[in-house]
Length: 622
Ligand code: ADP
Ligand code: MG
Image (cartoon, rainbow, N blue to C red; front, side, top):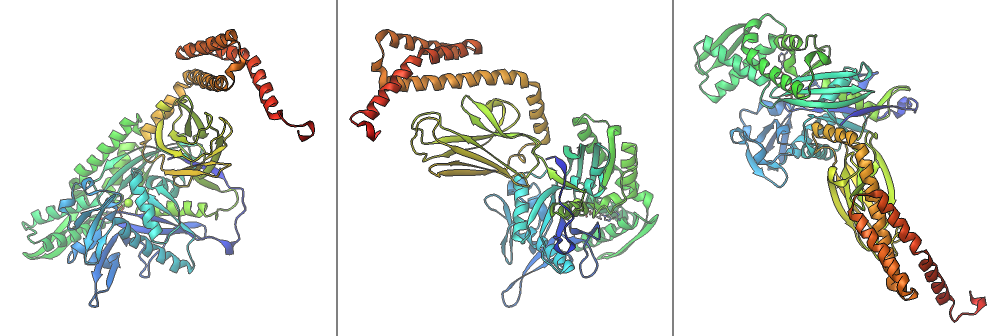
């Protein structure tokens, strides 16, 4: 979904009324919480001064049978000895079924497929990924509340741009479980771009290169008129810093002609390799040493050696970048700026390769571990209304119009695209037939005039409308889109108060390509659509006229002479025939002919009903 800036007219709030809002990067390996303090965003440290919280939760049962859990570093430390009950990388399970996890068999967990989402069996019971994520979020919330010694107003939580509806909803559920008020979910690449202030800079295309511990993501963002739009995303869900660790560990073992025999050996050498790798981001050479069951492993590694080892993997990431650019029909030199995200982009070899690819130095001023959380904090601060006068408030906009199907398969647009969200709009509708007691509501998304070319989002029925003449019922249909693009539609008959509603998430099911396609199609076919719409509208009008005439004939047909009746029947047949053809002028003429041809009959009916109403009553009773 795109972002739109609107200026905030309100003044800067009183410092005592400042609302505390944080940004949370709920990461696969690490999570962070940040907030705007003293005018700039910063990550909040724990009591030991560490800003990073490992995304790990260990479940335990103590001697008295009480369930306990460790979160973060403490949990991670026990990962090797209690891997079954120590859940790491839970982000990969969010909103996923067991069938969605191709590597589930290689993980140390006992999975249980539950409706909607996989869960993990632990000593403390079956834990859903939502619960595990909620533990991490609650820990960060506690950290923030301790830091400010105050309650939190709300949080912006980041999610990968490719997260689907179920994964986003699972993230929101986790936040709610952790007692957080979610101001909004924000795409990670967009958060990184905001952290660098790109939303206040030059319009154009930006690439966000995110190489973390286990995943690589590339996103292209388009900034225009203050609106960030995700143009394309790609990457590799099995490429990250962990792979460099493996290569380095294997190289060190091969140099020393040693082997990591036990699982403990393997873990030990990987930990050492990771430490060495990270050291090589600042030093020209480093030592890898650790104690294995077969003896002491000791190797000296240079930065060049690591770069050589890493090259095939870095090239693999650039192949993903190329693919995304090609699909989006963008050349590398069209990209205005490149933002580096993720701990692995600290590696000079990665920076050099990315810089060479795009022909420009990537943005690396901000800490690549923190940049997503910092961007989320900036937006949280704005959403909480803490921005100073003249600052801009970032809002999402609806990527596609939302509307309803009306008679004739036409779309009545209720909320036009590019409307900033949250938003709410309502429109009144009425019944088409006499005595109609139910109304089918069909919610659609798209730019076309005809229902069949839009995307169907939901259908529901409003039942129990009291029988009334066609057009007498007043049905108010309200559309409401919250800050996360969650749409609720309700229909209420105003006289009787009967009501029905549905909640839908309109945009998440669509890829950006699909959105772009629907927009393009809407623009190119607009003229043809207008003609088609006019024809359909005429058909609806014809249908309505025929229905009204039939009702009138059934009730008061005896008022007509045989010839008049035949004439009216003829006019009705003519409409029926012209409805089937596509000639709108002829159809409109036939409608007018029927209207004119039944005028006298309508007047007669009116007289009769007045006579009936007055019959048997004295003048003073009227
Ligand atoms: P994620 O987004 O997957 O949670 P991060 O962005 O925190 O992950 O990145 C973690 C990865 O970054 C790890 O593989 C870690 O070894 C690597 N990393 C962290 N610091 C450095 C460094 N100084 N040099 C090289 N790699 C680093
Ligand atoms: Mg990350």
